[in-house]
Length: 284
Ligand code: MN
Image 1 (tube, rainbow, N blue to C red):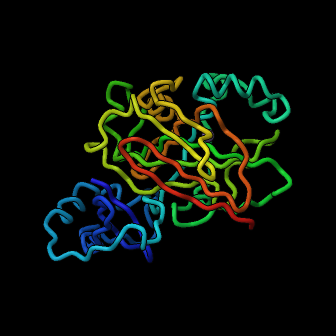
Image 2: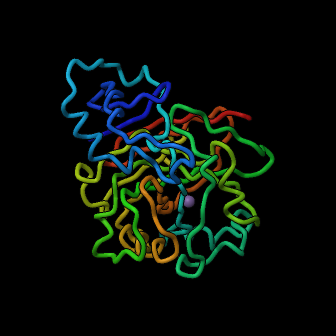
């Protein structure tokens, strides 16, 4: 099942080039009161909402290209991200000392993970707003993993069972010496979209082609089989430090080919089994 959020917080089922409005299925969510939960209510109750979606009838159908896509997860508690998790990307950072600050060129096993601010998150329908045009700002395409259950100390053999679904992540990044959490958490620098593909539909994430184009030119083209820490290893690693909650998103790392973006550019990002999204870049 492909689920999107669109327009004014509508819930949609994506089928081919259509979005079926299934917002009424959200009535199955438990009501929350203050203090609101620090996880995503929809992702935590995804199975129940899916039952609601399957029993709906007479649903409005909207052409996909007429909706504004929001992030498929509304309220992630955290965005966990993997730095330099493809060998060929590590190699390109080693080779270019001008662009990639030396303090960040290390193996992921030494660097560990980092967090991106949830306030930086947008969906595919919103533009990336370049904040510091004087500094190099790069695209990074990544497989995004949406956690479905509260979990801690997950064994790699059990890791796929805690996943609600998958999405495409763009980890937009200013290059430079500062901490990653600063350079990668500007407003609009964490794109998620175009929708969530549920884990049962997506299958095993171990062998997925991903591709990113800027203005029609291919910049990144790779396969998740080349991840240094694969998805189960990343979940085991992350959950040995953080409790993971429903709706937490794991950016799994970007492959080689990262490069600068500028206002006026259009990014097209695709992952086999999820789909494609197009995101515009503008000046802030
Ligand atoms: Mn990244």
